[in-house]
Amino acid sequence: MARELYLHTLPARILHWVNAASIGLLITTGLYIRSPHYFPLFANMDIARKAHFIAMYVIIYGILIRIYYSYVSKDYQELLFRLRDLRSIPDLTKYYLFLKKSTPDYGKYNPGQKLLYNFWAVLVLFQAITGFALYWPDVLAWFSRIWGGPVVLRQAHFLVTWVFIVTVALHCYLSFLGGWVVVKSMITGYFPEGESMQPASEEKP
Image (tube, rainbow, N blue to C red):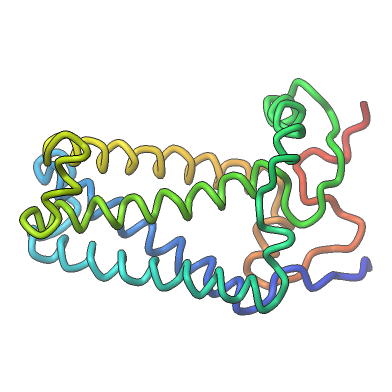
């Protein structure tokens, strides 16, 4: 039986699933708030708005705690996307499109994963600021004016919601494509030694 490596610590796993649940709740409540007739996901607007704000505060604190934990545990060295990682994106994209049979072993996270995780943190910040500006239009009227008014700001907020929907769906797809061992590692923390974190890695060119 292959030895298993302790890949994801308990704090990292807890924060992963808390943030995942928060994003899911933010997306569903946001869709309802935007168009309750097209997305009848909640009993009423009051419930949706309260849940939306709770999820927003949870994910903001979740990301801040994750950043702090990454610094304390030195995990940021594996999570932080660097400019040199851009060189690997074309080959990695070809691999995920099944145009290449193999890809280098990038370690715990490949450049695409690092780019996505860093990108999500920026998007959450943008959604938080625009969300506050929409909720407090008088207090943050200056910010709304920068974007061309509340209508444009609302459209931008809604567009980023769909960016989250698409990228979260892509993340889930690629995780399941990697096999059960990849998904299980985010539950148990353990990953079989010798296995690759990338999908279809056993295929030979």
